[in-house]
Length: 330
Ligand code: AQP
Image (cartoon, rainbow, N blue to C red):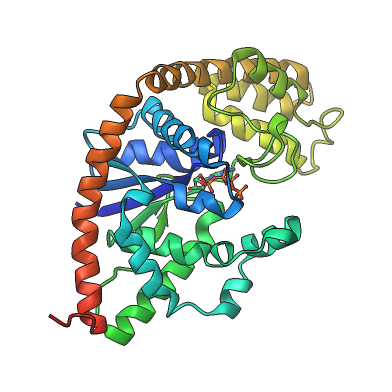
């Protein structure tokens, strides 16, 4: 079976972007691939979260993944910080990563712009740690959203540099999605991608209550009416149709597509329908995740078992990496 790795940062409540960019693919891959999925708690430390929040954040991400349909019997589910081998590989890969190329990464440049008071080395070397997460399991496929595409290219570079310098150890992993393209879920205000740390009212969380889901969708940006028939669709409308294509029935989508083409569409009606379909999609996940979080003992067990499996494979990779580099003295 091909090896698959992917992680989600425990930086807040999971949202529709995490679901359709990442988790949906995890679920589809769990039968036919050898899957390692983790909660990226080390990655969350770049912004110095309150220590007392960490445990709850990690358990919630785990619960939301399982509630979405991930089966802990079929995949290894673990916390990144339970795998110390990742940290050692990160150190080794840092010797192959160049400051100049790290500084050019667009997500790093965004962070520098948004929080210039906290440009720490962890933020700069985020793609190196992410590469270690993936390479430690020698993964070939990485189910992620479109925002991670460039980081994956860096992972391939590090794999190549290591293999060229020391001898072959690491496959070059590719970003993966079961459709043709990687997914990018837009925020409801049209300001960029949906993300845990952005505008809460423009993000649909898997933990949102029904009324909150309705409120957010009714407030989503639309233009004032249908555009002229030959004009390109405004981005805000493309975004609404994209959400509808993900959670509504095909004939519902077709109904509004036709109405758009006839210029008879009423965005209020479309949003009402989308809101109901979204409630039906999110509510069962939310309720199941809430129940799971009542049982931290169960979640801890899953995390321990997942870590044991992930460490076994990671230790083998690290042993070989050390040997190839020459760190095998005894
Ligand atoms: N909007 C999105 N569309 C598609 N995929 C997405 N992912 C995230 N947002 C979208 C995918 O979810 C996985 C986990 O990514 P993350 O933990 O970095 O999630 P985030 O919401 O982007 O997190 P933050 O902490 O709010 O980060 P910022 O705002 O700094 O990006 C990945 O597979 C990602 O592609």
